[in-house]
Length: 203
Image 1 (spheres, rainbow, N blue to C red):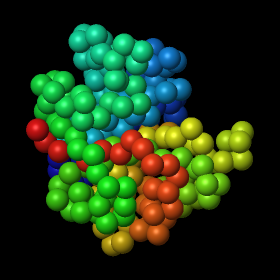
Image 2 (cartoon, rainbow, N blue to C red; image 1 turned 45 degrees about the horizontal axis):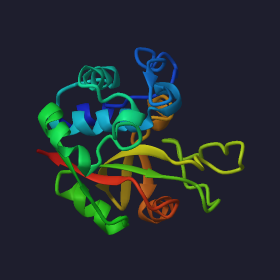
Image 3 (tube, rainbow, N blue to C red; image 1 turned 45 degrees about the vertical axis):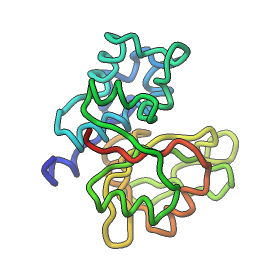
Image 4 (tube, helix red, strand yellow; image 1 turned 135 degrees about the vertical axis):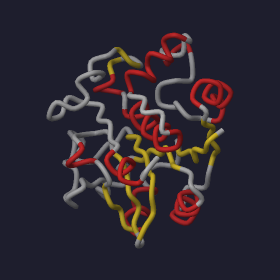
């Protein structure tokens, strides 16, 4: 995808300044996209960045439904959209595949430098509040006094000048597109939990 287009690309899972309205209330997993669609939106951003297909979360969800893949209880979709167990489906349907990867700053930087993108989750289980907005301010604490204590999924798509650029589906483009995490901040972010991160490549 051309660089300027890649920089602008962003999908939010919620109703945010008119964004996300086309899919935010669609049923997804046990709730809807607004409540539980971070993985879906992050997947769509990974997919479009690699393939330039210009799909939306609504388009991807329609494919899931067409192929009876939209219910978490009956499939691996919903929180694990890009796990390697779904590679056959994702290769056939979207032209991408995933690999497990080491959860480290060096591994993330290497994957991005080689042209791949990363579908990754973390949480604030250590109480260190690593989640940020694009203007550098911390995301607010939730009812537990932490941030995303259950985990949240983003698209990590670029590494430059000692910082990672992250497309976060939690809110509107102005706050959540191209959020910069320094290498030190990313190390803290990665320490939040130890699961659900995949290196995504063209099939």
